[in-house]
Length: 371
Image (cartoon, rainbow, N blue to C red; front, side, top):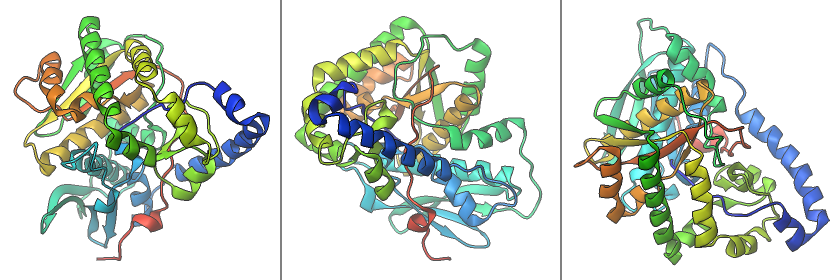
């Protein structure tokens, strides 16, 4: 989930810092990475195995691409548990984004199961103090309707497209489809499309970003999850791959220095002005209750929204800074018309070409022993 940063500016930085040889090798490595990412997203066909369903679940949106989940499979169903070793305690001290990520994953799982002939019922689970989610397979038949099928085919194509969009508005009928697709009990979705309100939300994103950039612990945590090179992204299978944010790949030894040079408040603010002003709108998700159960529900609603958007040719990207900075949440709720509620997620949407896809860990790394 849930989200984050373009950290380098322009391909010319690679030339200035490392020379032509770096650029040539980066192109070769990028081709290897493209094959890696494509193999992760091979379409799932029926009958799907448990491993196939887990693979599709892991393609869900998640914060910093930490993939904070573990799966337990059995003949009866699939359980998703939190992997607290993949927490981001600075940006997400109450594990809000972690549980949203679990909700995104279980929604992918449920959609893929229906579409491949193994439908199930989703429930929130508790094991001691840990909250997770499960899909229990059903014995009676259930078939994917047209909307579910479209979301299923969008799973391998969904991405957070962290670039400027082209400014085109989304037609009203498609806005309504997006709104309806995100219907989950306990979750409210506000669609902000009026330009003045989008501008106010933009200013909150920049204010949140400024506050986070002034926090050394935040910057250090973010930097830890960036994968500057294709080889590192392939080896680790997680994190924020630089080209997936529209930035050049660099050798892993060079990337941190370039990050320190380029990651500045002014350049980041200018970037978010371009990105948000070019977006067609902003969606804000708010769930009740304000606990892991509600946050999982918010993740499910958000994933459905993103998959429907993908099916409609609409790009999405998280701009969660103003909900990650506690003092700004009430202002976000006010702009979105959600007064009195905690806003959980802020997502911009619009039209743009695709960027490279983010990495994922292999299924073997996320499956626990069979139940």
